[in-house]
Image (tube, helix red, strand yellow):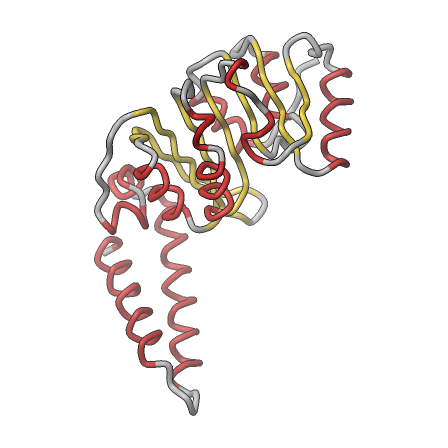
Length: 227
């Protein structure tokens, strides 16, 4: 029986182009199991840093008779695989952008053979794009979707140089071109949040003028790309 996974993970699976995978923070190994059942991978590592989810991953892989394809490894970030594993594609899904960027930075020596990165930040996607630029990965596809009340961006990159503008780092080069409905919703909500914070700051006795200016600039930038 095929495993049923969330739409945000199915969308990530659509981008997987290589057959040796490391899924970092593997969420019970759902994505590697799904990819193995669809014959999209020959070998996968499901990495988990927490004991509970790690044990669940092991059980899920056993229940789906995939122990010959998927290794469940407990460890932090990219330390769950070695260069000898010849990992070609890494997926990191459903984490904050800062954590994803930190994982890539601390494990950058492991990226030698990694051709493709598929990253799904739920906040601070700009930090992910900045890190990819620093590590010489070129973003060639992006998507955005909402599930369970959270908005997720998907950033897909391969080895290659990239130069992003400040707007492209914040909003995404391809998301800016697509301007999907959920993208517009996300940034209209962001304008509302900024307006609320500005109101609080302007009513404060100790006005933080620098923060007010930064927020006003961000609001102007969002409005310029939306309207």
